[in-house]
Image (cartoon, rainbow, N blue to C red; front, side, top):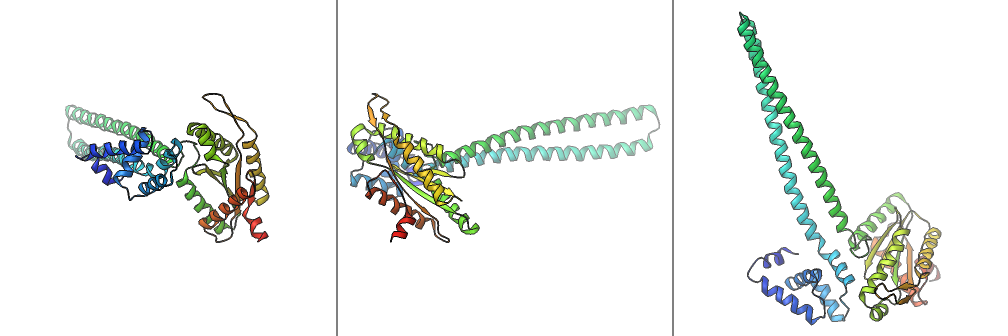
Length: 351
């Protein structure tokens, strides 16, 4: 959430905002799940923000607010705040560990300095010692100082070991947070944010290395009608099914992402058009090859089909242009009867 909304939720207006959120969700026929409630708090607390504008657009258009929709919006608009807080927490832990290690090292340095002075004093005493009692006293002092320095070094070693483990644990946790912030919660594919970054990077690589790159956009045919007939939970089941097929096909360096709603995207680095077309045809056929069943009732849902459009990168072409041409090819697939693959390059040649 934004800082403004966070501040409101910790002040006298918090209860009023919470009540308005529940009332607004009821008026829009949106279930008050924890995620929906968080989204609605952000929307009402900051109606002019990106999330607020998107929810207003959806409500004005009469679009259903499903579990899948909520997860897409959360992935797009909420993780950054949670990620920032996670990073702040990690920073505090790291500062504490580094301060502790710094103090332990300082103590070790002081102990080493004291030990050095002890050795110097012992050397001077040995030169003037005139009997066994004095020698025994000097040796006893050296033994005591040696024991102390060994104890201090052991303490420092243990502290460094503990701090190393804690920092490694912290690093692993932050990496998991980073992965979560880039993953679509419903399908476990890359989310829109991750896709945008990956596509931009892939276009830059293709330009700098002169390598090949293709982008495909995939849309589930008649998904709204499917949702209206069987319900949104079953619609989520279909989204996960399609995502599973894409995930199995998109082994690295390929990238599969949920682009939004029932749309998905695939990035094909350094693959020629024939190989990309063959992979997309395989995906299309596999998705449509199964007759799905509704989990809750075992009703036969029939087969699900997808329309696909793809385009190859042109030298110097920005990511937005490549995406636009792939989208145009997708809509050409839909206009031609759906359940087919169309290449933007074919359209360009025909034109």
